[in-house]
Length: 470
Image (cartoon, rainbow, N blue to C red; front, side):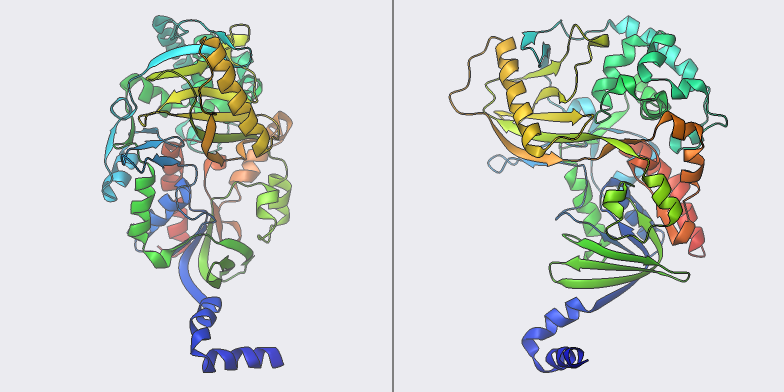
């Protein structure tokens, strides 16, 4: 009691402490509080604000955008994306970019034109000529694949609305599915496009089909893949930040407690300037639904505990390198001639990508099992060294260095086939709206921002608005 009285008097009597006290004691009232300022969280916030709802986003990083990583060369001003960069130009994507006045362009106009070669990154030997699959074989396989996709509803691809009973085709490993329907010509394409899923041939087909969905197939056929016009996807999230305003986005913050009551939600957030308490009618969580990520702050229900505890995951990172000693205007693809469909074993990197800033390359690394940041970095540098060997290139005069690194784990959340059969996803989908909480993000649909925004727009936001009374 004495401490509380002293604190109150201190705030009243000491002008220097006034700002700090007000920050520490700040209470916010919003219609919706959103945990996570990545693609799904920021999209939700902007759209809800456009609908006239008050929002606040809580983000742990010092910037919004999540898996977006944009490199800016200070000397030239050039930018390039080495995280999220490719979207399907749906009406939602077009409208969202347009509303924030951020330009889009066909992916071919943004990515630099390069020569592509293949190499076995593990053994340091040159690979076959690129592309490794004949174009006619690939197109024929795509037609056969479309026949299989047509068996499932749009709702299945948007969220986890599975047929009951779940068809056996969705439960068998992706590698078996490809063999069953003679789709091997699509295997490497899926490996390169839908990264961060670990050993994709062992993944149940359900997860790979939801990634390699009709939206992605149509985009491939009609060439409707786009990117931010200047190779700067971070510009989208910077524009979203300006649109929301400083009172609607709390950066560099840590959620310390969430209590969900019958009449509201209370979120306590630690920020660089003090503690903020947010009272909201509705909570949207975009954090990956893993217990180790949620249990430190969320008052999990028994059902949430039981469901989220069943998820396993893969691991995904990216990096920018300098002094690689690799040729200009050349991207090197990791291809193992002795592996099924040429898919190299993981842990490993997918490719070493040429970028428009001279001397820089980007890589993406994935592992099906836990790896430390130091192990990932060592694997990246050793792989680049073996690529030089494969191309008969000398080591560079200066040491190869990683100048940017981001670990985006966990990725590729999945549950076992037995859990799928037992009705896991029926219970999972039913969590939406319980305890004033809605969920969105890649674990609720798939890893593509285009699909995530579609899921959020169609399934989450209307339910949120309805829960708010319209």
